[in-house]
Amino acid sequence: MTSSGQVRRATSLDLAKLEADVAEALPGSTSSLPSIKGLPSVQSESMPDYVEHQDGVPRVGALSAEAVVRDYESAAKEIEAMGAELISAAQKCEAMTAEVHNAISYMRDTAATYREEAKKIFKRIEDCALLTEDVRKTCETVKRRIEGNNAA
Image 1 (cartoon, rainbow, N blue to C red):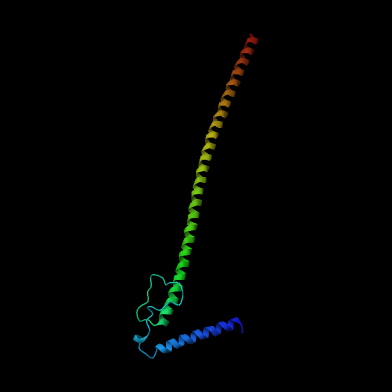
Image 2 (image 1 turned 60 degrees about the vertical axis):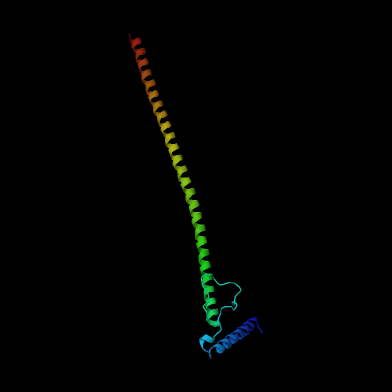
């Protein structure tokens, strides 16, 4: 027999036991059904704190409720895990934003330094141009004097 055949056979045995439990419980009134309190849970993990079995709930209903609440709890934990991932992503974004602000500050400082350097160079060039103009005028004045002395 294949492993799937074994699973089907094991499942049919479980279902037969479940059917027998239900059939046993049906002839009597609901008050004669065994209470779930005190009976062990099907799974070894404890149920979430936010739920508690009611008195008088038949085992089948209690097991179904446990299965559903466990599925919901599993989904809730996955949602919380996504929240943790979002927090991590937000922290990375905040760190990147801080780095961007530092880079912008550095760029602004660099641009200010360039402007100051441009101002210095601009002044030097104009100072040189004024000095050159003064030298040219002085040379022309001296040249005219020399020419005026030679003519006289």
